[in-house]
Image 1 (tube, protein in one colour):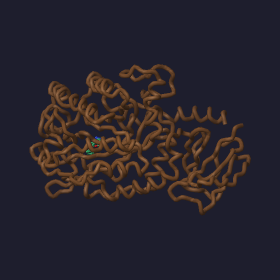
Image 2 (cartoon, helix red, strand yellow):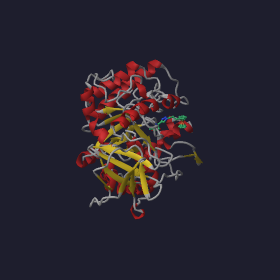
Image 3 (cartoon, protein in one colour):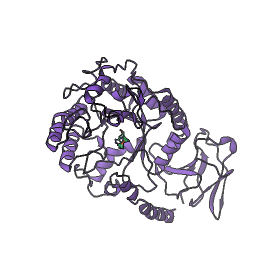
Image 4 (cartoon, protein in one colour):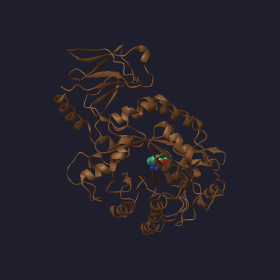
Length: 453
Ligand code: H79
Protein backbone atom coordinates (compact mmCIF):
# COMPACT_ATOMS: atom_id res chain seq x y z
CA UNK A 1 0.00 0.00 0.00
CA UNK A 2 2.73 2.45 0.99
CA UNK A 3 4.77 1.84 -2.13
CA UNK A 4 1.67 2.51 -4.08
CA UNK A 5 0.83 5.72 -2.26
CA UNK A 6 4.27 7.06 -3.05
CA UNK A 7 3.91 6.26 -6.71
CA UNK A 8 0.49 7.91 -6.81
CA UNK A 9 1.69 11.10 -5.18
CA UNK A 10 4.56 11.54 -7.62
CA UNK A 11 2.24 10.83 -10.49
CA UNK A 12 -0.41 13.23 -9.13
CA UNK A 13 2.10 16.05 -8.83
CA UNK A 14 3.10 15.59 -12.46
CA UNK A 15 -0.55 15.49 -13.50
CA UNK A 16 -1.18 18.72 -11.62
CA UNK A 17 0.44 20.81 -14.39
CA UNK A 18 -0.97 24.32 -14.57
CA UNK A 19 -1.37 24.37 -18.34
CA UNK A 20 -5.15 23.80 -18.58
CA UNK A 21 -5.83 26.56 -16.04
CA UNK A 22 -3.52 28.96 -17.87
CA UNK A 23 -5.25 28.20 -21.15
CA UNK A 24 -8.67 28.83 -19.66
CA UNK A 25 -7.53 32.14 -18.19
CA UNK A 26 -8.09 30.96 -14.65
CA UNK A 27 -5.59 31.62 -11.88
CA UNK A 28 -2.61 29.31 -11.81
CA UNK A 29 -3.45 26.55 -9.33
CA UNK A 30 0.23 26.27 -8.53
CA UNK A 31 -0.05 29.58 -6.68
CA UNK A 32 -3.02 28.38 -4.63
CA UNK A 33 -1.73 27.31 -1.22
CA UNK A 34 -2.11 23.68 -0.25
CA UNK A 35 -3.40 22.81 3.23
CA UNK A 36 -0.73 20.15 3.45
CA UNK A 37 2.08 22.66 4.04
CA UNK A 38 3.24 23.36 7.58
CA UNK A 39 4.67 26.79 6.73
CA UNK A 40 2.47 29.82 7.40
CA UNK A 41 -0.22 30.23 4.77
CA UNK A 42 1.04 31.48 1.43
CA UNK A 43 -2.02 33.70 1.19
CA UNK A 44 -0.56 37.14 1.79
CA UNK A 45 -3.79 38.72 3.00
CA UNK A 46 -4.12 36.21 5.82
CA UNK A 47 -1.75 35.91 8.71
CA UNK A 48 -2.57 32.45 9.90
CA UNK A 49 -0.75 29.16 10.24
CA UNK A 50 -1.49 26.23 7.96
CA UNK A 51 -3.30 24.61 10.90
CA UNK A 52 -5.54 27.66 11.42
CA UNK A 53 -6.26 27.77 7.73
CA UNK A 54 -7.12 24.07 7.64
CA UNK A 55 -9.49 24.59 10.59
CA UNK A 56 -11.15 27.54 8.84
CA UNK A 57 -11.72 25.47 5.69
CA UNK A 58 -12.66 22.22 7.46
CA UNK A 59 -16.46 22.55 7.15
CA UNK A 60 -16.13 23.46 3.48
CA UNK A 61 -13.92 20.45 2.73
CA UNK A 62 -16.34 18.14 4.51
CA UNK A 63 -19.40 19.70 2.83
CA UNK A 64 -18.30 18.89 -0.74
CA UNK A 65 -21.63 19.94 -2.25
CA UNK A 66 -23.30 23.36 -2.35
CA UNK A 67 -26.06 25.23 -4.14
CA UNK A 68 -25.30 28.28 -6.27
CA UNK A 69 -28.27 30.61 -6.79
CA UNK A 70 -28.21 33.12 -9.66
CA UNK A 71 -31.07 35.49 -9.14
CA UNK A 72 -31.41 39.03 -10.40
CA UNK A 73 -33.66 41.19 -12.59
CA UNK A 74 -32.41 39.27 -15.66
CA UNK A 75 -34.98 36.61 -14.70
CA UNK A 76 -37.69 39.07 -15.84
CA UNK A 77 -36.68 39.15 -19.54
CA UNK A 78 -35.59 35.50 -19.06
CA UNK A 79 -33.55 35.51 -22.28
CA UNK A 80 -35.92 37.54 -24.46
CA UNK A 81 -35.64 41.19 -25.51
CA UNK A 82 -38.01 43.00 -27.90
CA UNK A 83 -39.43 39.69 -29.12
CA UNK A 84 -35.97 38.28 -29.90
CA UNK A 85 -34.31 35.32 -28.23
CA UNK A 86 -30.93 36.62 -27.07
CA UNK A 87 -28.32 33.85 -27.32
CA UNK A 88 -25.95 33.14 -24.44
CA UNK A 89 -26.21 33.26 -20.69
CA UNK A 90 -29.48 34.56 -19.21
CA UNK A 91 -27.75 36.90 -16.74
CA UNK A 92 -25.70 38.41 -19.60
CA UNK A 93 -28.74 39.65 -21.55
CA UNK A 94 -28.15 43.35 -20.88
CA UNK A 95 -24.58 43.09 -22.15
CA UNK A 96 -25.37 40.83 -25.08
CA UNK A 97 -28.29 42.98 -26.35
CA UNK A 98 -26.57 46.23 -25.27
CA UNK A 99 -29.70 47.31 -23.43
CA UNK A 100 -29.34 50.90 -22.22
CA UNK A 101 -29.53 51.34 -18.43
CA UNK A 102 -32.65 53.53 -18.78
CA UNK A 103 -34.46 50.62 -20.45
CA UNK A 104 -32.97 47.77 -18.45
CA UNK A 105 -33.97 49.48 -15.19
CA UNK A 106 -37.62 48.90 -16.13
CA UNK A 107 -37.24 45.18 -15.40
CA UNK A 108 -36.84 46.05 -11.71
CA UNK A 109 -40.23 47.79 -11.75
CA UNK A 110 -41.75 44.52 -13.07
CA UNK A 111 -39.95 42.26 -10.62
CA UNK A 112 -42.35 41.00 -7.96
CA UNK A 113 -41.26 37.52 -6.83
CA UNK A 114 -44.14 36.89 -4.43
CA UNK A 115 -43.71 33.11 -4.62
CA UNK A 116 -40.17 33.25 -3.25
CA UNK A 117 -40.03 30.93 -0.24
CA UNK A 118 -36.64 30.80 1.45
CA UNK A 119 -37.58 27.83 3.64
CA UNK A 120 -38.58 25.86 0.56
CA UNK A 121 -35.32 26.69 -1.22
CA UNK A 122 -33.29 25.61 1.79
CA UNK A 123 -35.37 22.42 1.98
CA UNK A 124 -34.63 21.69 -1.70
CA UNK A 125 -30.91 22.24 -1.12
CA UNK A 126 -30.87 20.16 2.07
CA UNK A 127 -32.82 17.30 0.49
CA UNK A 128 -30.36 17.27 -2.41
CA UNK A 129 -27.56 16.76 0.13
CA UNK A 130 -26.16 20.26 -0.28
CA UNK A 131 -24.47 21.78 2.78
CA UNK A 132 -24.08 25.41 1.75
CA UNK A 133 -25.72 28.02 -0.44
CA UNK A 134 -24.06 30.86 -2.34
CA UNK A 135 -26.49 33.44 -3.74
CA UNK A 136 -25.88 36.39 -6.06
CA UNK A 137 -26.17 39.51 -3.89
CA UNK A 138 -25.22 41.56 -6.96
CA UNK A 139 -24.38 40.26 -10.41
CA UNK A 140 -22.81 42.16 -13.32
CA UNK A 141 -26.13 43.96 -13.97
CA UNK A 142 -25.46 45.94 -10.76
CA UNK A 143 -28.78 45.24 -9.07
CA UNK A 144 -28.59 44.48 -5.33
CA UNK A 145 -30.85 41.59 -4.37
CA UNK A 146 -31.13 42.92 -0.84
CA UNK A 147 -32.03 46.19 0.91
CA UNK A 148 -28.95 48.38 0.38
CA UNK A 149 -28.38 51.87 1.75
CA UNK A 150 -25.39 52.25 -0.55
CA UNK A 151 -27.45 52.19 -3.77
CA UNK A 152 -31.18 52.64 -4.43
CA UNK A 153 -30.88 50.13 -7.28
CA UNK A 154 -31.93 47.26 -5.04
CA UNK A 155 -34.84 44.88 -4.58
CA UNK A 156 -36.35 46.72 -1.60
CA UNK A 157 -36.25 50.23 -3.06
CA UNK A 158 -36.68 49.59 -6.80
CA UNK A 159 -39.27 46.81 -7.08
CA UNK A 160 -42.95 46.41 -6.17
CA UNK A 161 -41.83 43.47 -3.99
CA UNK A 162 -40.25 45.92 -1.50
CA UNK A 163 -38.84 43.07 0.54
CA UNK A 164 -35.37 41.66 1.27
CA UNK A 165 -35.19 37.98 0.19
CA UNK A 166 -31.66 37.60 1.53
CA UNK A 167 -32.98 38.32 5.05
CA UNK A 168 -35.42 35.42 4.59
CA UNK A 169 -32.74 33.19 3.17
CA UNK A 170 -30.30 33.98 6.00
CA UNK A 171 -33.00 33.13 8.56
CA UNK A 172 -33.96 29.89 6.78
CA UNK A 173 -30.29 28.86 6.52
CA UNK A 174 -29.66 29.60 10.21
CA UNK A 175 -32.71 27.52 11.16
CA UNK A 176 -31.57 24.55 9.07
CA UNK A 177 -27.83 24.47 9.72
CA UNK A 178 -27.19 25.51 6.11
CA UNK A 179 -24.13 27.74 5.57
CA UNK A 180 -24.76 30.88 3.54
CA UNK A 181 -22.40 32.73 1.25
CA UNK A 182 -22.71 35.73 -1.04
CA UNK A 183 -21.66 36.08 -4.66
CA UNK A 184 -20.73 39.69 -5.37
CA UNK A 185 -19.61 40.95 -8.77
CA UNK A 186 -17.21 43.67 -7.69
CA UNK A 187 -15.79 44.92 -10.96
CA UNK A 188 -18.46 44.73 -13.61
CA UNK A 189 -21.53 46.80 -12.86
CA UNK A 190 -23.45 47.65 -15.99
CA UNK A 191 -25.63 50.11 -14.07
CA UNK A 192 -22.86 52.42 -12.83
CA UNK A 193 -20.81 54.95 -14.73
CA UNK A 194 -17.21 54.28 -13.79
CA UNK A 195 -17.61 50.56 -13.23
CA UNK A 196 -16.35 47.94 -15.64
CA UNK A 197 -18.36 46.28 -18.39
CA UNK A 198 -20.92 48.70 -19.84
CA UNK A 199 -19.27 50.35 -22.84
CA UNK A 200 -22.60 51.10 -24.58
CA UNK A 201 -23.71 53.65 -21.94
CA UNK A 202 -20.50 54.75 -20.25
CA UNK A 203 -16.85 55.45 -20.79
CA UNK A 204 -14.47 53.70 -18.40
CA UNK A 205 -11.87 55.66 -16.41
CA UNK A 206 -9.58 54.50 -13.61
CA UNK A 207 -10.59 57.43 -11.37
CA UNK A 208 -14.28 56.82 -11.81
CA UNK A 209 -13.65 53.13 -11.20
CA UNK A 210 -12.02 53.85 -7.84
CA UNK A 211 -14.92 56.09 -6.95
CA UNK A 212 -17.35 53.27 -7.80
CA UNK A 213 -15.37 50.79 -5.68
CA UNK A 214 -15.31 53.12 -2.69
CA UNK A 215 -18.88 54.39 -2.95
CA UNK A 216 -20.74 51.24 -3.94
CA UNK A 217 -18.72 48.03 -3.72
CA UNK A 218 -16.99 48.54 -0.39
CA UNK A 219 -20.12 49.81 1.44
CA UNK A 220 -22.23 47.02 -0.04
CA UNK A 221 -19.68 44.42 0.99
CA UNK A 222 -19.84 45.85 4.53
CA UNK A 223 -23.63 45.65 4.49
CA UNK A 224 -23.60 42.05 3.36
CA UNK A 225 -21.07 41.04 6.00
CA UNK A 226 -22.87 42.74 8.89
CA UNK A 227 -26.62 42.42 8.29
CA UNK A 228 -27.18 38.73 7.53
CA UNK A 229 -25.53 36.79 10.34
CA UNK A 230 -22.44 34.69 9.73
CA UNK A 231 -21.32 34.74 6.10
CA UNK A 232 -19.56 31.49 5.26
CA UNK A 233 -18.29 32.31 1.76
CA UNK A 234 -17.62 35.43 -0.29
CA UNK A 235 -17.63 34.66 -4.01
CA UNK A 236 -16.19 37.47 -6.16
CA UNK A 237 -16.20 37.34 -9.95
CA UNK A 238 -14.54 38.68 -13.13
CA UNK A 239 -11.86 40.92 -11.52
CA UNK A 240 -11.27 43.17 -14.53
CA UNK A 241 -9.29 46.29 -13.50
CA UNK A 242 -8.71 44.94 -10.00
CA UNK A 243 -5.15 45.77 -8.97
CA UNK A 244 -3.58 44.00 -5.98
CA UNK A 245 -4.30 47.14 -3.91
CA UNK A 246 -7.97 47.25 -4.89
CA UNK A 247 -8.38 43.53 -4.24
CA UNK A 248 -6.59 43.89 -0.89
CA UNK A 249 -9.11 46.51 0.19
CA UNK A 250 -11.94 44.04 -0.41
CA UNK A 251 -10.10 41.16 1.23
CA UNK A 252 -9.34 43.38 4.24
CA UNK A 253 -13.05 44.13 4.65
CA UNK A 254 -13.84 40.41 4.61
CA UNK A 255 -11.06 39.71 7.08
CA UNK A 256 -12.25 42.50 9.38
CA UNK A 257 -15.96 41.70 9.38
CA UNK A 258 -16.04 37.96 8.71
CA UNK A 259 -12.68 36.55 9.78
CA UNK A 260 -13.86 32.97 9.38
CA UNK A 261 -15.32 33.47 5.90
CA UNK A 262 -13.78 31.58 3.00
CA UNK A 263 -13.15 33.68 -0.09
CA UNK A 264 -12.73 32.49 -3.65
CA UNK A 265 -9.81 33.45 -5.86
CA UNK A 266 -11.60 36.06 -8.00
CA UNK A 267 -11.26 39.20 -5.85
CA UNK A 268 -8.29 40.11 -8.01
CA UNK A 269 -4.52 39.62 -8.05
CA UNK A 270 -3.37 38.08 -4.79
CA UNK A 271 -5.81 35.23 -4.89
CA UNK A 272 -8.03 33.83 -2.19
CA UNK A 273 -8.71 30.59 -0.41
CA UNK A 274 -9.65 28.41 -3.34
CA UNK A 275 -9.67 28.03 -7.10
CA UNK A 276 -12.86 28.24 -9.16
CA UNK A 277 -12.93 26.10 -12.30
CA UNK A 278 -16.11 27.24 -14.06
CA UNK A 279 -18.23 24.72 -15.98
CA UNK A 280 -15.43 22.16 -15.98
CA UNK A 281 -13.93 19.47 -13.77
CA UNK A 282 -10.14 19.57 -13.50
CA UNK A 283 -7.96 16.58 -14.28
CA UNK A 284 -6.88 14.39 -11.38
CA UNK A 285 -4.12 15.92 -9.27
CA UNK A 286 -5.37 19.53 -9.30
CA UNK A 287 -3.30 21.35 -6.67
CA UNK A 288 -4.73 23.44 -3.86
CA UNK A 289 -8.33 23.82 -2.77
CA UNK A 290 -10.93 24.21 -5.49
CA UNK A 291 -14.61 24.22 -6.28
CA UNK A 292 -16.17 23.49 -9.66
CA UNK A 293 -19.21 25.69 -10.26
CA UNK A 294 -21.64 24.42 -12.87
CA UNK A 295 -25.08 25.00 -14.34
CA UNK A 296 -27.88 22.41 -14.44
CA UNK A 297 -28.72 23.51 -18.00
CA UNK A 298 -26.67 26.05 -20.02
CA UNK A 299 -27.46 29.26 -18.16
CA UNK A 300 -26.90 30.62 -14.65
CA UNK A 301 -29.72 33.18 -14.60
CA UNK A 302 -33.17 31.87 -15.56
CA UNK A 303 -33.85 31.65 -19.28
CA UNK A 304 -37.22 30.47 -20.61
CA UNK A 305 -35.83 28.79 -23.71
CA UNK A 306 -33.07 26.74 -22.06
CA UNK A 307 -34.18 23.13 -21.67
CA UNK A 308 -30.77 21.51 -22.05
CA UNK A 309 -30.83 19.88 -18.62
CA UNK A 310 -28.11 17.53 -17.44
CA UNK A 311 -29.33 14.15 -16.20
CA UNK A 312 -29.25 13.22 -12.51
CA UNK A 313 -26.80 10.48 -13.47
CA UNK A 314 -24.37 12.99 -15.00
CA UNK A 315 -24.75 15.30 -12.02
CA UNK A 316 -24.10 12.59 -9.41
CA UNK A 317 -21.15 11.26 -11.41
CA UNK A 318 -19.79 14.82 -11.64
CA UNK A 319 -20.03 15.18 -7.86
CA UNK A 320 -18.28 11.84 -7.37
CA UNK A 321 -15.60 12.70 -9.95
CA UNK A 322 -14.99 16.01 -8.16
CA UNK A 323 -14.89 14.44 -4.67
CA UNK A 324 -12.47 11.77 -5.97
CA UNK A 325 -10.14 14.60 -7.02
CA UNK A 326 -10.45 16.57 -3.77
CA UNK A 327 -12.77 19.36 -4.95
CA UNK A 328 -16.19 20.77 -4.13
CA UNK A 329 -19.23 21.00 -6.42
CA UNK A 330 -21.29 24.20 -6.49
CA UNK A 331 -24.37 23.44 -8.57
CA UNK A 332 -26.53 26.28 -9.81
CA UNK A 333 -30.24 27.01 -9.82
CA UNK A 334 -31.78 30.09 -11.46
CA UNK A 335 -35.10 31.08 -9.87
CA UNK A 336 -37.79 32.70 -12.03
CA UNK A 337 -39.21 36.21 -11.68
CA UNK A 338 -41.88 34.68 -9.42
CA UNK A 339 -39.12 33.46 -7.12
CA UNK A 340 -39.46 29.78 -7.99
CA UNK A 341 -36.74 27.27 -8.80
CA UNK A 342 -37.74 25.65 -12.13
CA UNK A 343 -39.43 22.23 -11.76
CA UNK A 344 -36.81 20.59 -13.98
CA UNK A 345 -34.12 21.72 -11.51
CA UNK A 346 -36.10 20.56 -8.48
CA UNK A 347 -36.64 17.11 -10.04
CA UNK A 348 -32.93 16.62 -10.70
CA UNK A 349 -31.90 17.82 -7.25
CA UNK A 350 -34.41 15.41 -5.68
CA UNK A 351 -32.89 12.51 -7.64
CA UNK A 352 -29.40 13.49 -6.54
CA UNK A 353 -30.75 13.65 -2.97
CA UNK A 354 -32.12 10.15 -3.19
CA UNK A 355 -28.70 8.82 -4.18
CA UNK A 356 -26.96 10.96 -1.54
CA UNK A 357 -29.24 9.69 1.22
CA UNK A 358 -28.01 6.13 0.65
CA UNK A 359 -24.46 6.98 -0.43
CA UNK A 360 -23.53 10.30 1.23
CA UNK A 361 -20.85 8.64 3.38
CA UNK A 362 -18.84 8.13 0.21
CA UNK A 363 -18.86 11.91 -0.43
CA UNK A 364 -18.93 13.99 2.79
CA UNK A 365 -15.58 14.36 4.50
CA UNK A 366 -13.81 12.15 1.97
CA UNK A 367 -10.45 12.67 0.31
CA UNK A 368 -8.99 11.31 -2.92
CA UNK A 369 -7.90 7.70 -2.60
CA UNK A 370 -4.29 6.56 -2.90
CA UNK A 371 -5.44 3.94 -5.42
CA UNK A 372 -4.70 4.64 -9.09
CA UNK A 373 -7.54 5.60 -11.48
CA UNK A 374 -9.90 2.68 -12.20
CA UNK A 375 -11.50 1.97 -15.59
CA UNK A 376 -14.99 1.45 -14.17
CA UNK A 377 -15.38 4.67 -12.15
CA UNK A 378 -13.92 6.67 -9.28
CA UNK A 379 -12.58 6.10 -5.76
CA UNK A 380 -12.92 8.17 -2.59
CA UNK A 381 -11.57 7.50 0.90
CA UNK A 382 -12.29 8.31 4.52
CA UNK A 383 -10.95 7.00 7.82
CA UNK A 384 -9.77 3.55 6.81
CA UNK A 385 -12.54 3.04 4.29
CA UNK A 386 -12.20 3.05 0.53
CA UNK A 387 -15.33 3.81 -1.49
CA UNK A 388 -15.41 2.25 -4.95
CA UNK A 389 -17.82 4.18 -7.18
CA UNK A 390 -18.75 1.81 -9.98
CA UNK A 391 -20.15 3.84 -12.90
CA UNK A 392 -19.84 1.11 -15.55
CA UNK A 393 -19.40 -2.43 -14.19
CA UNK A 394 -17.02 -4.32 -16.50
CA UNK A 395 -18.82 -7.57 -15.61
CA UNK A 396 -19.84 -9.46 -12.47
CA UNK A 397 -16.43 -8.93 -10.95
CA UNK A 398 -14.90 -5.52 -10.25
CA UNK A 399 -11.09 -5.53 -10.39
CA UNK A 400 -9.51 -3.08 -7.93
CA UNK A 401 -6.21 -2.07 -9.46
CA UNK A 402 -3.47 -1.36 -6.96
CA UNK A 403 -5.23 -2.72 -3.89
CA UNK A 404 -2.69 -4.53 -1.77
CA UNK A 405 -3.54 -7.02 0.99
CA UNK A 406 -6.82 -8.60 2.03
CA UNK A 407 -9.62 -6.20 2.98
CA UNK A 408 -11.17 -6.55 6.43
CA UNK A 409 -14.70 -6.28 5.05
CA UNK A 410 -16.44 -5.44 1.75
CA UNK A 411 -20.11 -4.45 1.36
CA UNK A 412 -22.49 -2.27 -0.63
CA UNK A 413 -22.80 1.17 0.95
CA UNK A 414 -26.57 1.22 0.44
CA UNK A 415 -26.91 -2.12 2.25
CA UNK A 416 -27.54 -1.27 5.92
CA UNK A 417 -27.01 -4.95 6.85
CA UNK A 418 -23.50 -4.81 5.39
CA UNK A 419 -23.91 -8.24 3.76
CA UNK A 420 -20.35 -9.20 2.75
CA UNK A 421 -19.62 -9.20 -0.98
CA UNK A 422 -17.59 -12.10 -2.38
CA UNK A 423 -13.96 -11.26 -3.04
CA UNK A 424 -10.89 -13.05 -4.33
CA UNK A 425 -7.29 -12.04 -4.66
CA UNK A 426 -5.27 -12.86 -7.75
CA UNK A 427 -1.80 -11.89 -8.95
CA UNK A 428 -3.47 -8.84 -10.55
CA UNK A 429 -5.03 -7.73 -7.28
CA UNK A 430 -8.44 -7.72 -5.64
CA UNK A 431 -11.64 -8.79 -7.43
CA UNK A 432 -15.06 -8.06 -5.93
CA UNK A 433 -18.25 -9.75 -7.07
CA UNK A 434 -21.03 -7.23 -7.73
CA UNK A 435 -24.37 -9.00 -8.18
CA UNK A 436 -26.22 -7.63 -11.24
CA UNK A 437 -29.34 -7.07 -9.13
CA UNK A 438 -27.42 -4.67 -6.86
CA UNK A 439 -26.26 -2.37 -9.64
CA UNK A 440 -27.36 1.26 -9.30
CA UNK A 441 -27.41 2.74 -12.83
CA UNK A 442 -26.18 6.08 -11.42
CA UNK A 443 -23.26 4.79 -9.33
CA UNK A 444 -22.97 1.63 -7.22
CA UNK A 445 -20.81 2.27 -4.18
CA UNK A 446 -18.80 -0.57 -2.65
CA UNK A 447 -17.18 -0.01 0.74
CA UNK A 448 -13.84 -1.66 1.33
CA UNK A 449 -12.69 -1.60 4.90
CA UNK A 450 -8.96 -1.45 4.52
CA UNK A 451 -6.75 -4.27 5.69
CA UNK A 452 -4.59 -3.53 8.70
CA UNK A 453 -1.42 -5.06 7.20
O1 H79 B 1 -22.01 34.23 -12.78
C1 H79 B 1 -21.69 33.31 -13.77
C2 H79 B 1 -21.30 34.01 -15.05
O2 H79 B 1 -22.22 35.01 -15.43
C3 H79 B 1 -20.00 34.61 -14.64
N1 H79 B 1 -19.41 33.63 -13.75
C4 H79 B 1 -20.39 32.61 -13.48
C5 H79 B 1 -20.27 32.08 -12.07
C6 H79 B 1 -19.14 34.94 -15.75
N2 H79 B 1 -18.87 36.18 -16.10
N3 H79 B 1 -18.05 36.17 -17.10
N4 H79 B 1 -17.82 34.93 -17.41
C7 H79 B 1 -18.46 34.11 -16.58
C8 H79 B 1 -16.93 34.51 -18.45
C9 H79 B 1 -17.06 35.43 -19.59
C10 H79 B 1 -17.92 35.07 -20.61
C11 H79 B 1 -17.97 35.91 -21.77
FE1 H79 B 1 -19.54 36.14 -22.85
C12 H79 B 1 -17.65 35.50 -23.08
C13 H79 B 1 -18.29 37.28 -21.81
C14 H79 B 1 -18.29 37.71 -23.14
C15 H79 B 1 -17.90 36.60 -23.93
C16 H79 B 1 -20.79 34.60 -22.44
C17 H79 B 1 -20.78 34.85 -23.78
C18 H79 B 1 -21.24 35.77 -21.83
C19 H79 B 1 -21.49 36.69 -22.82
C20 H79 B 1 -21.22 36.14 -24.01
